[in-house]
Length: 187
Image (cartoon, rainbow, N blue to C red; front, side, top):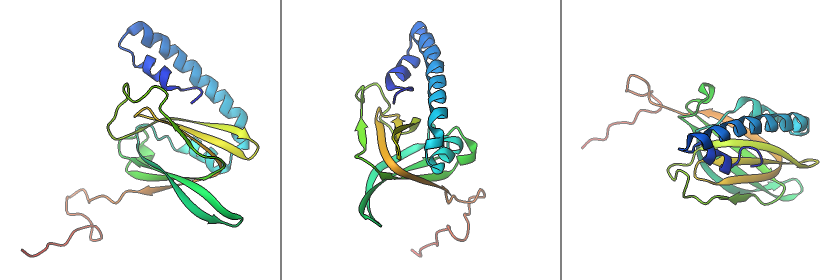
């Protein structure tokens, strides 16, 4: 993460009001800087990455993975990486009660770091905090994701796709739908 860094988030969450106030001001500057940078590179990103950036705010979504998935491409072997988010507590109502599957065709190995260690971060179910897109070189871009457990995932890729799928939930009346209701098993 170049703009919304783990260090800045910790200062933002500080119990010291002076530290938190300074970090709040820095946070606003960092957001503006990233917004300007993204505006400069967005035309060089694939349409799917631009749509994801504009439509899929995943803040507070549960994160599962990343996982490497080998796939056979036209030009021999290519590696893919997948991340799945479950969006039950997300701040964005349009994705409430969905799974979003993110798929990347890797250009290089992904990098997972914990720049500050895990101690100052929440070790419960990892959640998506912030993400940034960057351009590494023509045709290769990077999606960096900051996770609530302190991990920063950097995914250098050539292609990116995502799918949004509604969760199958029980009906509100508690009976469930005929497709999801379990049959009673005789004792």
